Length: 324
Image (tube, rainbow, N blue to C red; front, side, top):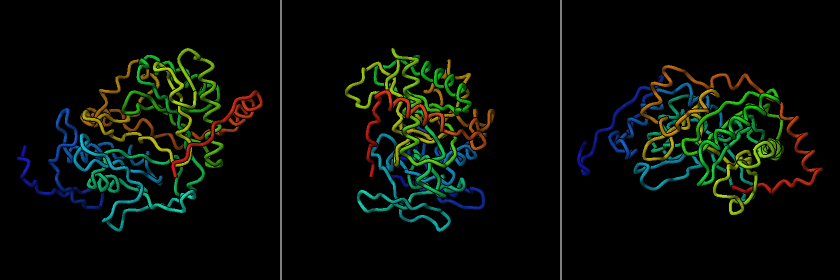
């Protein structure tokens, strides 16, 4: 390991037909086991088809850690300065403030590795694509445990989610969050705005809550939830709300990954074991477990009918959180 004052020479990475200069390759990003910036880039190369599928054509917020994950985090909406001309963007408008932002729009693996050069660890894409950023094509089910919620409760929430999706004829694609929760993605037709997709997500969350009333909550205010609750966070479908992409590394000292899993793995998955150190071999063996997601499109109309039923029965839809 070079001394703190030593300057490690940059390295050049060949990514497809691009050459990307990676500065400070030996800078430690993940303190638990000492993985470096170069290790991070090599990880994303190893899962290239998976991370590109997860990010392709989506506006993407970057979580950057210039000093490694134990240092300050930068939430970057706008594309960082100095991007090469081949890096593509998508323009987003934020009417509340009359502003816009040109966000990274990944179309190839080189975009991801260039973002790593700019100290990006986490990739947080929108659930819509640049062809129409106001029409989501991804419904996100976020099983978000409160601090004292046991992981067995998260597993039960995922199993019930799977059961309901099967009843609807929808295919769900599970993954770990890279933290203490689980996510399930469902591809949908980009025919509805964020308000309707969020209404559909809330209706689904309420059905999970009905089946697991002792485990699950859809309570809007965090202060009103019990410390042991599992919150089905339908708000991740609101405009400008993002969560870590499949295959995104998280900003933890261990270098955990938001990792696609099979439904059969839900019963015994250990999320802390899915890291930048272990995922390359897993990907080489299993391939991209989300590879078929774009072919499994679900029509959310049944969920909108559930939403109308709940509203007739007095179920209120909380106002949409504003991220502008």
